[in-house]
Image (cartoon, rainbow over all chains, first blue to last red; front, side, top):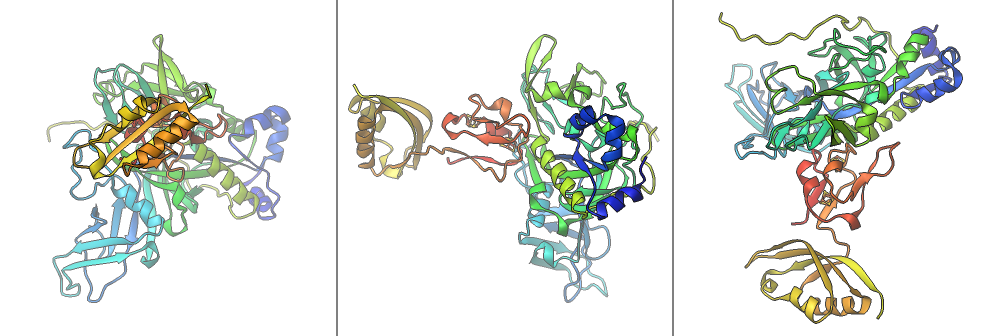
Length: 394
Length: 139
Ligand code: SF4
Ligand code: SF4
């Protein structure tokens, strides 16, 4: 048994033993759980993939004379200005003004909110255009200017939903190509897409939210941020396998961090043909090894994690709830799964390569004493269920 | 007979040269076996052609000298399709779509994606599916 304080003491003195969630299983197999739990202080987990519920608050400071922005665009991408005078919220899935979307199906969706966020973090010069109705103390009615992230007072990423615990594997049972947020799906189950870091993924290594909670310090695209709430649609009450690992989406995290500290290679705009734009993010979460149970759960392997294979032509949009089969991540990573006797090629949207890089970077930062673990100030709910939207009369 | 080799080329035709039967001459006068991957040759516009030529070194050399007399630019490193390793996130979305495995994992442990340009047949499938705009076409 170790406490958060003891682990942080070891981190600060540069003595912490840190392994990634990719390395820990073999280590525990070799040393045994009891000895490994004594030795290991932290296991690092990570993921990199599209996370649509992402965005940021920007504060521009005041022009002379002042403006109370009522409508605003950054690089022609609409931002939400229904807050204080020069604060806006820029969302990842917002399309650029004039994008034909799916009018010429399937649309290309070359640039949108996620790309603006990528360019912002990369330090590029961006255009702000804003309108106002004018008030006595904010007389300006219009502004067009250029800025970089360094000119802003704050650029704070605030993501209502990141790090889905687990996710669907999408296939297409229809006879025409479909364009989804899980990529292009060819007819007749020709290909499948998954989107999870599997055995490296944060919440799959802490399936019951024993160490990851509100207040947990996380590595968000290179910046030190934290979990500020349960993520939207967090639903811990779900089907689980014997080892406690959810067999569906389940838990999510709401994350925040200072974008001025982020690294551009982990903040990437996403264009999904026929679907839209999004933002791919790199997230790392340290798991403090408080006891043997916590350690044991970080030893989950790809082959022990099941994901539901779902048809995205009818079953997903019509919410039928049908699961064709469950596939484990070891099968999925092999590049081919078998469904009802037929071999289906599998691609991924989540980058295991980047997730591995993040888990290693975070492990190095902890070893150098630069990244401490934090005790949550509140746990994530364990028993929440996901509610549907009911269409009804008033 | 000396040994034959296969080379992948990208030819760029300036506006005026598109009408000439250059490929015909490559086959007929220079004994080359030609395998065209992709072409965009529109009258009154610039044209591109990506192809494999198979023949002896001498024949290929002579054929290229002939092609150059038409003001055609020859790019011997192929590159009708490019892959930007800095834009690639190694997600693997393109892998099942790449018919020749030109795009593939360097190794299963790190799952780093690499691009073997010589294997690319320029089908453009990766450009359609890459969410990160890492693959592009010169034309
Ligand atoms: S789809 Fe694009 S980003 Fe993903 S591995 Fe292929 S080239 Fe790289
Ligand atoms: S163009 Fe076709 S063959 Fe070439 S890398 Fe892309 S998918 Fe593979």
